[in-house]
Length: 438
Ligand code: DOR
Ligand code: ZN
Image (tube, rainbow, N blue to C red; front, side):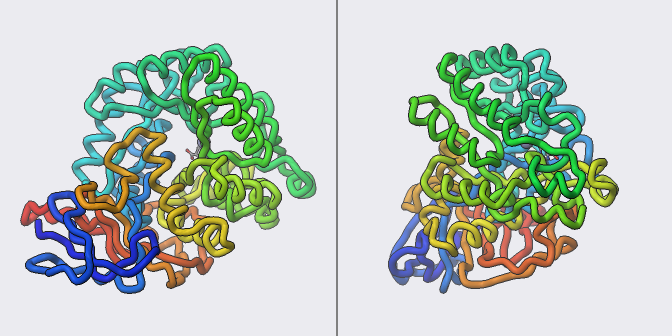
């Protein structure tokens, strides 16, 4: 494989433009006017270079719902979104609660080679919340599973959660909790508030999330374990995470792009593209989440990319499945909600989309500094462009994006995985099988 020379690019959007040479999977040289030699030249003029993004929360639907997404289509979406590593959630069919499934997902991700796909293992057998899955066996498998979650479901039984945290601590792995007390959300389809009441939609109260966040902070404290809160959606969750961090508890939290940009005023049309779990909250929650991401109370952005088939979305609101696409639009939504209003600069984008998630997951080859000798897992961004999202043009098999028809700022120009281009100008670049180039 030839070296790649990125010409005239600004690192983290800072300082003067430089040239960056990638080769042997690493950043080999950084400096002004480097000699191209036989390297492939990529024009970086007007563009910014950041470490590749890491998504702690992706649903790839394989095995089981390959009609909605596959590891291949989801990997393409990830590469187009600037991601170099994604964590694939365990709520597949069969559930990723055994080493057979987690190692399959890992190997398939490697074969495709567009993004590093890390399987998330289930915490409980079949996501049923009753019996711990064999986390140790999954952690010892080829995929070396390092994150476990019943996402889609909450590990709601406090005794099971306590044991899971203790087990995770001894294995040195992370539990990511989908915080939803099921007794408080039975039948709920939308955020409990004036909008849902007016529209006749059954409400999902903030307390269903916050009570689990508070409980799990205390359980993590007592177990001496780490806990990660998936898709924080309320101002109260922000306060609780801040409190727990202040107590020295090992808690981290993610927020999705959709909870930063959208709110429950979108429900007016009853279009189930806006149905998601946890639900879109009120504008005041979105404001609190933005501030928390800016000041570090919330550690990172995670997409909760959740593809669904048309028949599971284009139906009555109560019957529709919750979830939204996210991989290909995440950067643009973060620029719109965080960079444009001055809440984050581009170093901040690198922190919340790459460095912090890599650290939380314990990846030592992602979210690294832009420096010679570091792995060439990178994203090249055009910060000044705008684009209009068209659901049918996304790489995902499914089309359930709430951002359809929106014009958003900034776009990924190219993504590099170990120095190889995996996406360029809106098109994925699979490995060239004919030459064996990789
Ligand atoms: O909206 C959601 N969709 N939230 C979840 O927790 C699960 C996900 C899915 O798997 O579709
Ligand atoms: Zn979830």
